Amino acid sequence: MKKTSVNICLMGSTGSIGRQALEVVEKNSSLRIAAMSAHSNTRLFSEQLKKIKPEKACITDPAAFERYGSARTGGTKILPPGELSALCTDKKIDLVLAGSSGSSALIPIFDALSAGKTVAVANKEPIVMAGDILNAAAKKYGGRILPVDSEHSAVFQCLENSKSPPEKIYITASGGAILRAGKRKITPGFILAHPVWKMGRKITVDSSTGMNKGLEVIEAHHLFSVNFSAISVLLHPKALIHGMVEFADGSVSAYLSEPDMKIPISYALNYPQKRKMSRRCDFTAMDLRLEKYPADKFICFKLALEAGKKGGLYPSALVGANETAVNAFLDERISFPRIAEIIRKTLSETPKMRYNIPNALRVEQWAKERAEKLIK
Ligand code: NDP
Ligand code: MG
Image (cartoon, rainbow, N blue to C red; front, side):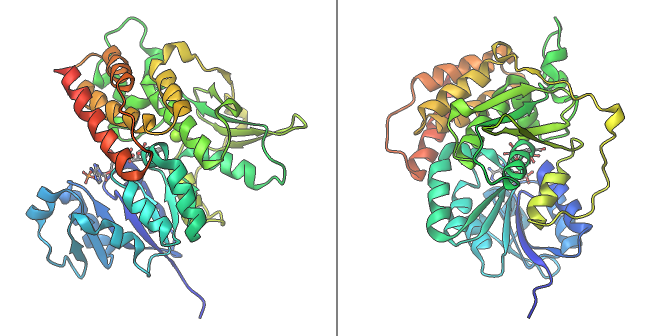
């Protein structure tokens, strides 16, 4: 019997990626949310559950789960925090969309790939921390990673249309709010007003420190199995070209679209089909200027690259220290320049352990605690 819809498990339905994914699914009758998770925003989650009516849902914050209870909400079975992997690996699920933040989805992504599922990954931290392990699990058990991050979706699509290997991969950076800062005091309010993208708070700060682009270079290294020397970043303030691939003959494929995360989300959910979306490029009004990425202005970009090139557990220390430092900046406990200082110091003390998922999570937690001590 022909299957009529793709059954999706959405992790992080209450976040920026999650809410946009729900909009994409709502407009597309061949997609269906069969399961979804949120962390602590039970108010929004409850509204979403009433509207979407998935079969199962999971609340990953223990206190929020306790508050909300495990009763069925309009036919949805609510599962406790430890059940997220079970939600992703359920035999009814065709595709998992990782839209939650930080490292929380690392084990569920690993479990889903090990169950042979296709995982559309927006959530870059798990790839950064354990890309080699996730790739190996996908290869061994027939799982597949589909990129959702706009730059990686772009590169993925440029590569899909070619039979030749890439010589070089380019991802673009809009630069965040920081490039317009001048001499003003850099407050969370200023940084959170991103000129192009509307995203969650943490990734918006990461865009201004350069960390987001550094994490994305590590992500590209894993997703496309290319050396760091073959990945370049270009500054492109209008964020219309998202990624490019250069081939041996000097020809370049570029991927363009309006800066709208719903486009790469829709492509991953409908893969390999392209479904109707409303945004169109206005070519005569487009500013396609590309410039050298001013890496000297983005210290966190350099720190991320160093950690990525060292590999092993350094990227996990990077992710942990960064999350703590960014939260402290958002809470106005540290100034903007101290974010990089705290990450640098934490990274320099990264413990040496074997590279595996439990140790990646251990080192990330260690880095969060070490960074917190440096802040106090
Ligand atoms: P948001 O902060 O908007 O949303 C985060 C989501 O994750 C929420 O649903 C939140 O639940 C959930 N969450 C938070 N903490 C935990 C936890 N400890 N365990 C489980 N779930 C948790 O983030 P974004 O949507 O902006 O980003 C999500 C991921 O996608 C990030 O890795 C980011 O780098 C990546 N990304 C985002 C883009 C964007 O445009 N936003 C673009 C490209 C990549 P709750 O709110 O219920 O607490
Ligand atoms: Mg991106």
